[in-house]
Image (cartoon, protein in one colour):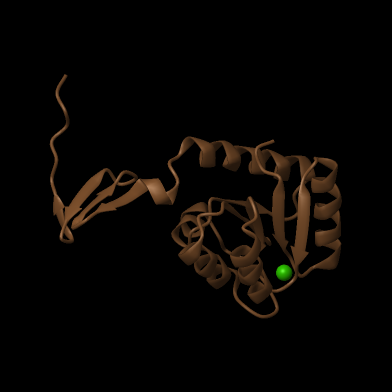
Length: 160
Ligand code: CA
């Protein structure tokens, strides 16, 4: 298991209780909050290894919570989506999530998603190394683009 500390953002007490039990059984340390504002504050203060985020929260829309976390942190985020949330993977990726799982889900399926996201997080360069500014030059490894003074420089593939 690559992740140790999990932030669970879920306002349904019964869903939260079963997720907490299951993840603790898988050897993970779980912090639980039931509001979006508390989730954003927790990520900023404690930098968990992964966030499990319910979309329907009492104080904020989960998509906004996701965007706000993503504006300051590259922590992996898995959306816990209720059936009827009309979320698909494209939408989830657009607001910055790494994956999503549809309720009701089994704990083993959730742990498998957490492991898969963990492997991708390790394989991919982090944001801090993916986008690298050097004076007026910005190298974006993720998009494989180079910008000089905000203008993209077109590079040709290196020949062997
Ligand atoms: Ca909810």
